[in-house]
Image (cartoon, rainbow, N blue to C red):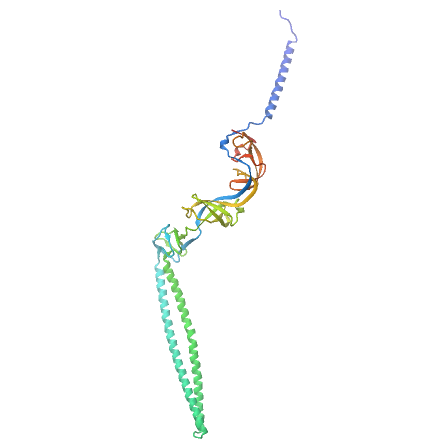
Length: 420
């Protein structure tokens, strides 16, 4: 028969409560423990990241930019007068010498103006010659008159002296003496006047000729100008080099001042390198540079720095010091590297894909070298001066530390990564 157990239900309820409390405590403990666990570090394959070791020693600061080779001596040949392109003799690429005919222009007005100027010059020269003959004839007439007046004066003077001697001897009257003396005095005045007239005739020749000579010179200059305009219809090179541009075609109408051809000296080239404006502040004239022409590297020196910024870059001219390699020609694309300074004893590392000079950035430092590292932890690193491929470390890393230089922005939420 069944035995009555009045406390069984109560005991069962107590056990349930105890089990529930224990279960709740266990769950709370598990939750707290899980919350205190660090999140699992993401895994990064070592063969896809770029790692480098921190070093101490000399570091060369450099900046780099793209550029082109351009001739140091370029000369544009401009049209001196209006005209139409009649014939093209040479095309770009042709070797030219001073005086080489490049193209021909036509302009009937220029031909007519040159002929008219030449005709006016000839007429003025003929008129000058006529005036010179007339003035020389007038001078000869004045000279003859002066000679006659002098002869008359000498004759009357001699007669007066003879009458004076005869008057002393009583052979002539006083009246006859006075008459002879008056004639001599008149002859003396006439002689003086004619001599002055002759001198004046001599001195007046030069100013009278100067007026016509000035007109002849004016017309000669005009004729020279018109002939130069006529000669300019034959467009010729003014220097030795290579014809590099010809921006006109046959039949084109050109105006004075229009560029017709460009001649450059291909043996004297310089590099025009564009440097980012943020890196150009330390560039100075005279700094050493290296120009990579894809067919060799040549040394150069900074010769000019453009004061203006264009599209975020500064144009720097680099003069080539040694001989250019074969294949170097104008407009060839090149890479330019300019040496800013040499730092003797600094801590440096390869330049990371992120972070600018004189800033503080987070960099993952590995717990070993490139082959043995299994984990990398983010550390704050203060950067100093930078170069093309390296950057100075001011604080946060020590020589011998291995760091990840690749772009790790996708792990910004993690302070450590696993390497495998």
